[in-house]
Amino acid sequence: MIRGLTTAAAGMTAAERMQQVLTNNLANTETPGYKASNAELLSFPQQLLHVMDYGGANPGLGPAIGSVATGVVFQEGVPWFSQGDLTQTGRALDVAIVDSTPPGTYAAVAATAGPGGGAGAAGAAGAAGLASAQGPVAAGPGGVLEVNGRPLAVVGPNGQALTGLVAVRNPAYRGVALTAAGGAPDYDDRGNPSYLFADTAGRVVGIPGQAGWEGASLRVGTEADMGLHSFFPVAFSSGQVAQGLVLTRDGHFDVDENHILVDAAGRPVLPVGQDGLPILNGRIRINPDYDGTDLFGPDGGPVVDGNGRVSYSVIDTNGNVITGRLGTVDADVAQLTPLGETEFEVGNTLDPAGVRPLLRPGTGAIRPGEQELSNVDAATTMTKMMAVLAQYEANQRVIRTEDSLLQLAVEQVGKVNA
Image (cartoon, rainbow, N blue to C red):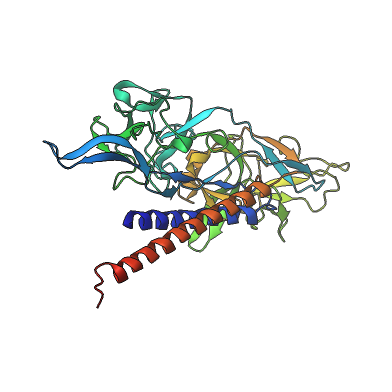
């Protein structure tokens, strides 16, 4: 009975968090470039049921008779970077991005230091210590789960990499799949998880779902939620942050009173230099005397009108003209954290010195005069919201029923008639 109450309460908590994610997605169906967060309610962990042997020579647990789930848990909400639909707006300040992320299976591995940043070379601080690696998940030497020889990272409940841990194939597991949806363990018909947690020496230290390991799992996905994607770099300043560096997919740009190109939040859009990376002290100044129709060329460069005037110039913070253009940068989305509606923090930091090494020159195509719409499917989101509400109400009824039974037990058990 107590287990039923605990399971129902856990289900209500998970459903509430799920509903918050879905509500935020639905509220941003009209936000250009918005990326929906994808979250699931998982039946995790499971416990094995045994026949109790009370009278035998060796009292204790008898044969296993199956498994039982102990409720559901909320899987970390991960932004879904699938391409939003493009629409032609005819507005000169609108610019859309079309990603070129290779399709396939991806998995999170520990970020490693290296030149150039990006996936597999995210720098010592990579966001939550993760990077994306493309390829199938396989069991390598010692049963360690890996992608192309790189061990998969064990991810904590908040999406951070748990250092000093690896996942190894469970020798007791009799199934086929090494992971289930999103990187959670698969379970065989005897309740054995497909993988266990071990230290770097191969010693098993934890079991998925066991006390203290409830939120630990792997992260396995596709190009929609992992890998390198393209973004516009933006200068961020707020509160104690004098100058920061963030990314956005919202190309619905505007200009401020100084004719500087800004994003939807009013922050300056940074130009990229000849190395393809953001110019931190650069600004894109739209020429108020420009008389043409288009502001940006196919590569993001300036356009010249019939009178020979350029559509914009790139200047430094002192107003001096420098070399640069509107462009994109690539970032490993395993290292991004949503910051507001369409901006993303890279590497859990706003410090340009920490962010810039995590970026690569952009590979996405620029579409001037077009706008990327939100990738939220309103109908699907509403359906999920109704399903989550039904699950919440079902768990609520379980608690009410259990409460009634407990009250009946207190009032009737041991009652002596006068």
